[in-house]
Length: 144
Image (cartoon, rainbow, N blue to C red; front, side):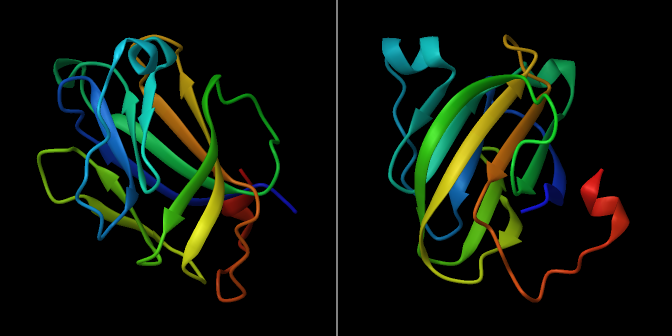
């Protein structure tokens, strides 16, 4: 499968974190010493990703499908997320998140998350290798 950009969102981090997960899920993963060191805290339905401070500006979150076709930084998460609402939300933990992407089916999805730079990330890439929506357009800009 070709690597495609599905969506790109600017997010203002809150206390150096961005939330990614099921839009209907309100439970926020808890941080501990192990997850802080890893740069991500996860539950079955959502992730908190460690980023730069809000005073440094927005964090750019890209969601991509397919295989790795470039260098996206340090891998901080490689697992599954359950997206029962079929809508991936991306945003701050203190505000209504953006509805970033519609999934063609509810359930578990393989997800990889990369951050760049490794500390104080300004760019987060969410890779969903098996995302395949027949209604998703396939335009040249999506393969950039």
